[in-house]
Image 1 (cartoon, rainbow over the protein chains, first blue to last red):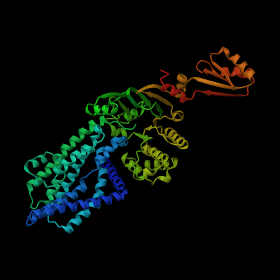
Image 2 (tube, rainbow over the protein chains, first blue to last red):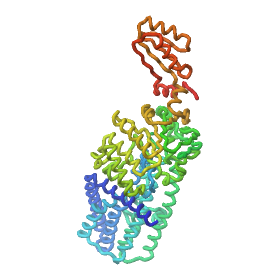
Image 3 (cartoon, one colour):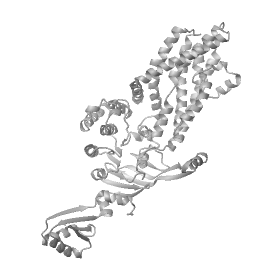
Image 4 (tube, chains in turn green, blue):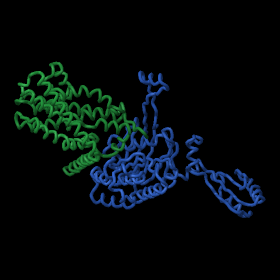
Length: 272
Length: 331
């Protein structure tokens, strides 16, 4: 049994390795993306600084500091959770290439996940780490408790899973619609607002807060970002956020499973 | 032993009816109408281990759909397929280990990485033992002559190279069944020849059951021990080439070169048999082999006449198949 597990692990590690190899084949893409991420981070932080200064609340340095930290963490997270699974699945289903994957003896969802991890590993090395260093040097942070880093890492991993499940779900809707990036575009706006990636959810008015609780998106960005950026440890909120993440993994996992089994029956291999 | 069992296999597609023109398109957009198309219609057959079976049929006949259901990629609307005892759709992952598949029009090799890496990944995927992997790989590299491009990524390969690499990838795990979906499409004659030789060798050495679809009749002639003709989702003929000729083709043509007077004599001599004779420069005698024995005709000609040259032709398989497609013949 252990032996079999080892072989399976080797296979999926192999997928990840191949995916990394695939990503770094296109070097220009990697650098262009890094540049883009840096610019985006810089602009976001500048906007918040300007906002605080123009409102004469610069004496509230604690608040600004927390926002900057929150923004930086979200930008780091974006390197971890942005899966290209939607495009990939759309492409595979649209061209019929999914046939070639389905004839192989592996778990399809794990395969797509490993494929995405390749991107994420490159993102971490070429974007997240440099951005983290850059931010620490220019803006400097203080964290409420160092033990939070550990909880943050766990929470970020859960974020990766939720984000993946969401992307996978939208991706396999292509079994029905062939192309689903328009659906993705439509959900994108809701995703961006409700995940708290632009504006922290603690600044939301009451009803928006309630809506965001009914959606999986805040479990992707807000949960880990809040955990690490909270000025003083809020135990109740931290536990609630982690619990929420687990609940969303179960819900999304169930939805994806049902969608997959129904979708497989709908599959038509395009192009002969 | 029957390695593949297909029972009442049916596949229906629901398609949106497309109306012509702008208003038609607008109408379909607002209120789409659907129609159901039967791509495969209640097919049943068994295939014995170690056989090479060729599927032929016109474009859109349902060959590829049948194959895709046999390997468990597509869900059957009705019926089921068992390969090696496993239900191919419900037990997809288990079933996947027992077959290899090559699509002539798609590649299973990873596009951006060297093909060698694909092979080593396949080793993990199918849990191939080290020794088996090594000896298989060495053998295939040798026979398929792949040494020169092992380190190239798939996207840089020529079609012939890619095809060879795909065949290797499909066979590394010693599958019991090999499915080939148009394996020689787009290849030049010499590569086609090599690939056919290789397929025959695999079948002989490893007793691998091989199922192939093709439009190239020479594939069928050189490879298949058995053929199945599929059209509009049904099997309209199953048997070997010899009996295909007997059932459908049976025309033999003997063309004779001789002096004109001799030709007239021969024609007169053969008049008692039910055959078609025409003299247009040469004498040509056309008859049905099932009705008349060709040796008796040849005896008749040789025994009494002086001839300069002779040629015997049978209706080419291609012609027979074309006739079947045109529905001129019915089982």
